[in-house]
Image 1 (cartoon, rainbow, N blue to C red):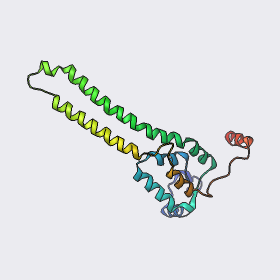
Image 2 (cartoon, rainbow, N blue to C red):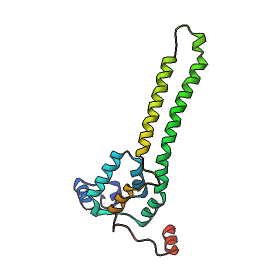
Image 3 (cartoon, one colour):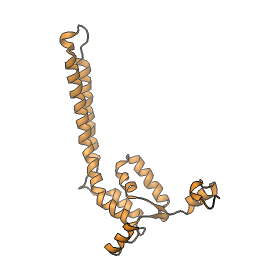
Image 4 (cartoon, one colour):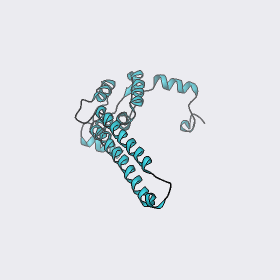
Amino acid sequence: MRDAFRGFYAPTEQEFATLWNEATFVVDSSTLLNLYRYPKSASAALLASFKKIQDRLWLPHQVGLEFQENRLTVIAEQEHKFGEVRKTADNLLISLNRDIDVLQLKTRHSLISPDAFVDAVATAVTDFKKYLDKLAEQQDGVATHDKLRDEIAALFANRIGPPPKDQAELDDIYKQ
């Protein structure tokens, strides 16, 4: 029964060992694009893993095309995140001041004075935004040389599937 319904059974330890030692690894465009999204340490670890199995990596032509077409968008998204985080930090301070003002603590409470707290949060927000500015200087942009793309290109050199011959072949693939 196991042979007739292989998809319903987990591979044996020996089958797993064979797969890890002999399988061809095919990645999709999201895997490659996520190398730009992951923390640097995670991207480096994934690239190191790819290098260990480089002789068994394979990239379908369509995946390579999707990677090339979407790479700059992902890089721009990463750049844009700095502005979004800055705005979130600013909104935090605005919200804090608004909520404190609504409580009318300066005129309606004899003991609570939020000034030191608000000042500390404002200082923390300012410091955090300076930190973001330093990080933004390290962020690769759409106009900078893309070292990560160079590494990906080297990994998949001569390991890319052929493009479709023509639109008719592509239409047939989509139909199937």
